[in-house]
Length: 453
Image 1 (tube, rainbow, N blue to C red):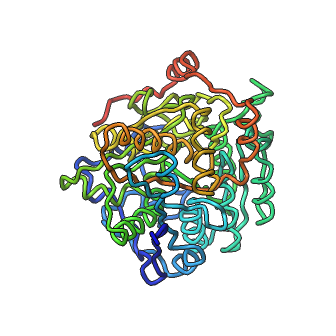
Image 2 (cartoon, rainbow, N blue to C red; image 1 turned 45 degrees about the horizontal axis):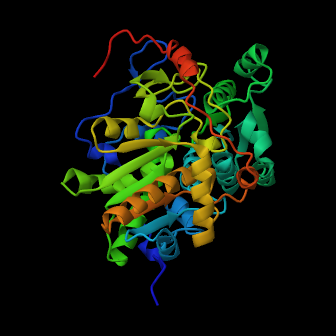
């Protein structure tokens, strides 16, 4: 019988994270201080020293602490699956594999960095962490990470997701976290947004500002981010390193790697360990998929912008729709971010990563077909990548080529069934690219005194 999954033992789990900064053909542009616009580190009041060091490290491999490895072993290594049933349903000669992160207790890849960040904060004597969450996957992961290291957890959840996904909130509260819908009346930035629009659906940029403000105002608290920053992407590379070993076990190598991007941590975790191969001449297409309603990489300029609405976070060079942009209420809450991880933006600019944008109705159509073939109900975020996997697999069917496709399947959609219900009952709608809103938001980009290379 054909093997449908490829398994690693605990002893085969990677013991170091892979740091792509050591191999970039050109260095990343620096972070800029939001006030002075001079090159800066992450704000020390917000991040522990160990994470600041990882953010800028040029060391190719960074050892995973034993305490973190021990927790990883609760759910790692995760399986790589061969999607035979999906291949048959599509009638494609393509070989489709997917690396599934939905078996963690939090239901997604986010736990890989949540555990690491909670560990480093606990080690530095921090008592409480604040964060934001879009769809709730990151908030869930950090809530559990904090519980495992006996830390308090305060989560600012984007308001539209807070009400769309109540079970995510309940999950976080079960692990002891305190959750508020963002924008909230608890912070200055939240009160300001609500005074301007009491019905604001919120955004990741607003929620980040609230969490950052909260952390700045308390000596016992630091801030934790679930995507975008270099050290977050670093922690996720355990996924791609496992996938490389498992592809070898399957006697296969990907021609195409596909994943969704909101802030970038899920997809980067899968494809970054393959970048050295691509730099050495290996022909791999790396396709990042984002929502048409929030297409930062496919439609945004590559320029300097704040990572949050209030302009409290460092200025970074990235593809952006403008830090004041509030995306439409798509169900893929984890993809409703105005910018993108600087590493992914840099690699895209260098021509090493492609980007595509897709609408949510065909995304859910593909997700349902995937679920009916493979049994797994995917989260709305990786369902965007599934849509492009279908496109590539059907292109193989048309051309007769047998390409190998690797899908980054970052989590399950068990708490997203309301979105599936809307699709199945014909109530789900697409949102057009909000050109006028983006143009207005881009008018508020920071005026960096001198364009830096």
